Length: 139
Image (cartoon, rainbow, N blue to C red; front, side):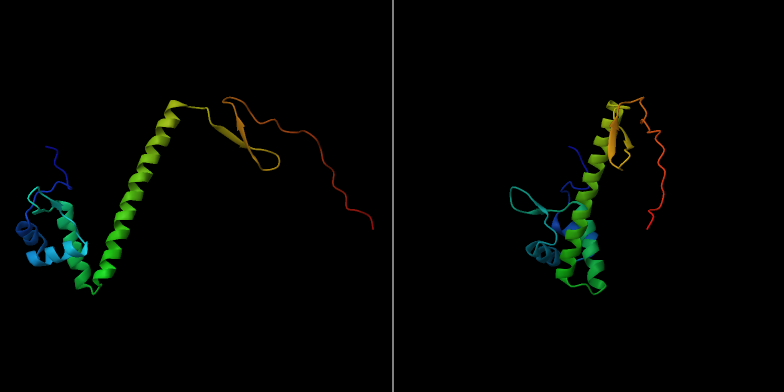
């Protein structure tokens, strides 16, 4: 069995003790959707280490005066940030793979009008050698 921070390990009494809360508080938070533990086939709750950490964070925020609705919002935003960070890591890995698989194929330069010009690897931008003389208009 693969164990990680999301593995449902703890019954409600152990999770409550680890979080420093009463088991009834955990049941209330489950009903409110603040922390949703995994359920066994017999419908009993199983809490993971991540759930216990979230319960501790709820206790901390609550002791600082944050309302339960505010706590729900904070937890939702933290989950969103974690999801976005994971996506950024995926995209960075995909970009790194692409750069390794196609070295030198993506070379760019700025054109005379400021546009982006794609070049083949090993080529240079051709510069115009024309001389432009500016003279003010006579009035």
